[in-house]
Length: 409
Image (cartoon, rainbow, N blue to C red):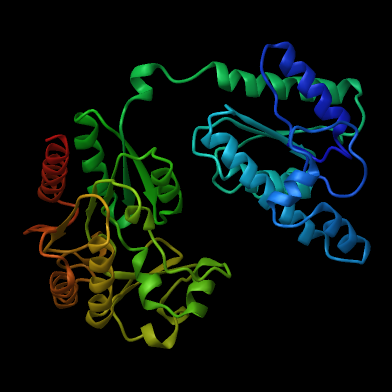
């Protein structure tokens, strides 16, 4: 995938190189202005139509002074649709894209449509403005601009061709490829619990993948069918999504996105889920050195420092009543089997007996709310221990074993 008015010669060189190694190449042209120097399998006209507009409209708008981003968004949307269709029909085994900052950003948006582990290579000349994020995209930075087939450009393209075909040729051994994956949510204050669970899960023949604080990557992997079960031990991420205003959510995440969704993959994927209240006993305020830095509504609460510049503030019973309902609502809508395991002696290291955030009454408000809203067919196991105790890990794994055994019947 590339803009064939500016990178046509380079794409043709790549195509001929890869085809000489007995691979079939499908080309996608995402250019708008200018004249392509080669014809793509999916022309710019086709890409634009898949994006919801005609190429003529985009050209006319550009000539009338329209922002370049508008056309880029249309072409990116069209390319996404084409690539999704190619992948779902089994017609592609890898994707290779190239371009400067704009084309690279468009390429990454398209590659993010493909599942974890699918081979993805981007050749770019401007790495600093490439929004890769946490995606499994291999980036090859060109030492010179990809204009003209000089010796350096050809070697860069040849290396990229070797990289993408190598990814196709070499895969995990069959026994590792078949190993089932369990996603586990974590925070520093629940790390001891997670470590105990990793050992127990791996002893049962699974691989454990740990996701710290956020679940967007876990959700994407679950939607792609990569994750076989979820141990949502640390549900802290629900706190800002339930307790904060849109303005607070945007500020907290540093984004204009104020979505309240979290692990919505369980509504469409038949995936075993065990939930626990890890981290629900706190608000987390990074970048602060004391309680004076938090907003007035939190200043009179119990608090502690988690490292030199992270303030933890206790959640209230009122907040946890809302959170209990939110957790129950999500569990009730899950497509697959769900269970809840609750440690009665504290939801994190910061709220065990004697710790600054210890507040059994607030914890109890969550438990009562959860019970009142949760469907009666969903099992709740209450354990008289702290979340980081061995007994809690034992109960979670026993619950996991029961769910897996029921699925096999």
